[in-house]
Length: 183
Ligand SMILES: CC(C)(COP(=O)(O)OP(=O)(O)OC[C@H]1O[C@@H](n2cnc3c(N)ncnc32)[C@H](O)[C@@H]1OP(=O)(O)O)[C@@H](O)C(=O)NCCC(=O)NCCS
Image 1 (spheres, rainbow, N blue to C red):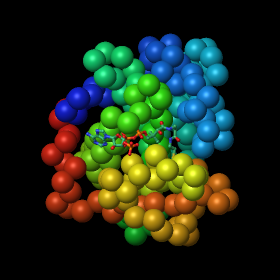
Image 2 (cartoon, helix red, strand yellow):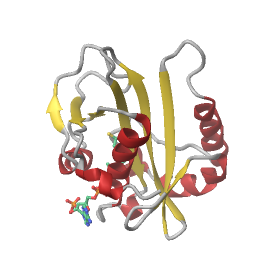
Image 3 (cartoon, rainbow, N blue to C red):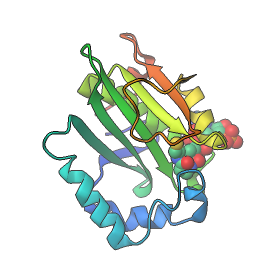
Image 4 (cartoon, rainbow, N blue to C red):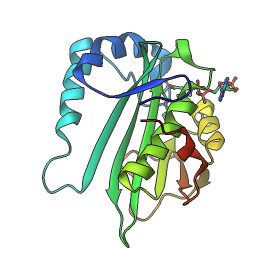
C-alpha cells in the first residue's frame, strides 16, 4: 500500500531489526509508559505474538503495519478493532515513529491512510485514541486529522490510563481520507 510519500506494509518479523533501529531512542517512550522496543529479539517476539491475534473468545482484531520511507522503516501504526453494540465497529489506534522522522507530517500521512483503510476495508465507523496530556505532538496529529476531544466511552478503551485525554473521529460516508487509499 502507498500514500503520497510512504509505503505501508503489514507488520512482520522481517521488519523487526529495522523497526528496532528506528524506534530505539529514549524520546519515543516519553509519553507511552516507557520504551517501545527493547531488543531485536524482543520486537520479533512481540510481532509474532500480535500476529496470532487475541485468541478465541475475544471479539477483537489486531492490525499492525510498518511504515517505510524510500525503503527504510520509520515507524509503525496499529489498530485494535471491536464491535461495541448497535452494529458499531470501532478502532482504537496508535502511531509510533522514530525521532529522526518527526516533524515532516509522515505520522499524519500514515495515520490518515490507516483510518481510511479501517473504514473501507474493515467497516469501522469510529476511531479512538488515548493520549498523555503532555504529548503535544500526538495531540496535534489527532487534531490535524479531525479527531475531537471527548470523554472516555462507556464501553471502555484498552489503552486508557487514568489522566489520559481521549479523542474520537467519526468516519462519514463522504470521508475525504478515502482519496488517500491507494492499494
Ligand atoms: C506522536 C508522533 C507520531 C508525532 O510525530 P510528528 O512527526 O510530530 O507528527 P506529524 O507526522 O503529524 O508531523 C507534524 C509536524 O510535521 C510538520 N509537517 C511538515 N510537513 C507536513 C505535512 N505534509 N503534513 C503534516 N505536517 C507536516 C508539521 O508542521 C508538524 O510540525 P511541528 O511539530 O513543528 O508542529 C511522534 O511524536 C512519536 O512517534 N512519538 C512517540 C510515540 C508516541 O508518543 N505516540 C503517540 C501515542 S498516543
